[in-house]
Amino acid sequence: MAAGNAKSPAAQDNHKQALNEFMLGLMRRNPGEGEFHQAVQEVAMDVLPFIADKPRYQDLRILERLTEPDRIVTFRVCWEDDSGNVRVNRGYRIQCSNAIGPYKGGIRFHPSVNQSILKFLAFEQTFKNSLTGLPMGGGKGGADFNPKGKSEREVMRFCQAFMTELHRHIGPDTDVPAGDIGVGAAEVGYLFGQYKRLEGRYEGVLTGKGIEFGGSLIRSEATGYGVGYMMDYMLRHIGESLDGKTCLVSGSGNVAQYCVEKVNHLGGKVVTLSDSSGFVHDKAGIDADKLAWVMDLKGVRRGSIAEYAKEFKADYYEGKRPWAVPCDLAFPCATQNEIHKMDAEALVKGGCKAIAEGANMPSTPDAIEVLQEAGVLLSPSKAANAGGVAVSGLEMSQNSLRMNWTREEVDEHLQGIMRRIHDQCVDHGEDKDQVNYLRGANVAGFVKVANALMAQGVH
Ligand code: NDP
Image (cartoon, rainbow, N blue to C red; front, top):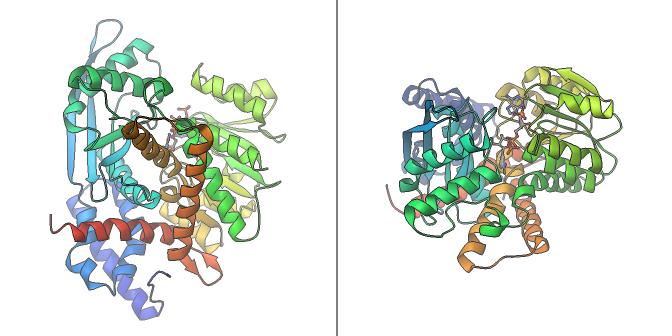
């Protein structure tokens, strides 16, 4: 099925006007929430033309309903640091939509966390979860807490204080959080322990848990592996492969690390990694041994990527992003809005042919425009990084069944899910001789949630 996109100039003018009116209303109702506006605009650009000839979606105000979260919970998180000082942070849980399953989405601990960022993430998550084909709604949460420079005990006390409030809003059939930036396996363990203590029940209320207490194999690897699989399917669709391709990866955290591992496995050569201090360019390629060193640097020693340059005699560029390095493929895996218009122009100039987004919303709207005009294949985050939440969904299934699947079984499910996401993007985004993955993901993600909402009556 192709996307219902009328192409005449008059139809395009109508779509533009509908988009402007919709966005003006959204911006009036949500002032100062730039990231949320950006995420909605990216979806509305494709969904409004799609529903233009489908009055039922319009009459029932489906897009208006999906852009107003079911609820937003904010709360005080009060904890004591190692010196006995009382500290105060703000916690959030945004429950966007439970039309197709319990709310599901990560928790982010980062000083930049605010309502706008979490609303954009919860909105994106709703579409992403829909694409996985698993019964999961969309949500997101977090706090403006900076784990950097905190002791393990301080992080634990913060997690306990955060869950002391959050526990009343979540549950295995209502809302199932997971990790995100600043929330890895250790933090999920502390959050789970506190939930269990408060509720007196042992249940799969969080995903990304340790293997010993209900976690799934491959969950840590899933997002990065999924990004690699998505790129592989995109290239196969045009009769190519990753073999011998020069690849840029940004970030050096969970998603970036396992993306590098999968790209290496599929025959690509990764030459960059980055963090909040800058990026490294290693012309010889980041092989398995160097990657193991990075995992220790970031996961255990919590050091800066600058140390990589010294250890392996690579080039280091302080305060810069890697997008001007010539490449065939790019994998932004650090954070939102890390590819600006100038970066997109540099990527095109450097020969980049395809991008799979590991981070959520890493490309700004004007960067997307540049990339699309240049014919660069772009798989958006809601499709390319859905592997993480997909395996979280499989963790929920394993918890309900009270059994554990093997690595091979989970990886097989993950590949199947990424393949189906790819194919849905093609179904809804095929445009002459090229696939518009952005439109494909937006429309395919929308259709399932919209149909569920319509079936459940006006609420
Ligand atoms: P991590 O915390 O493990 O790693 C984040 C990486 O990005 C670090 O290298 C960090 O640098 C870098 N970074 C953060 N902020 C900036 C910035 N402003 N400029 C440059 N670099 C920055 O997080 P994840 O790998 O888990 O997440 C990365 C992205 O992937 C996020 O957008 C997240 O929402 C998304 N995602 C993650 C999923 C998961 O399963 N983990 C699932 C789906 C999406 P430093 O080390 O200096 O802090």
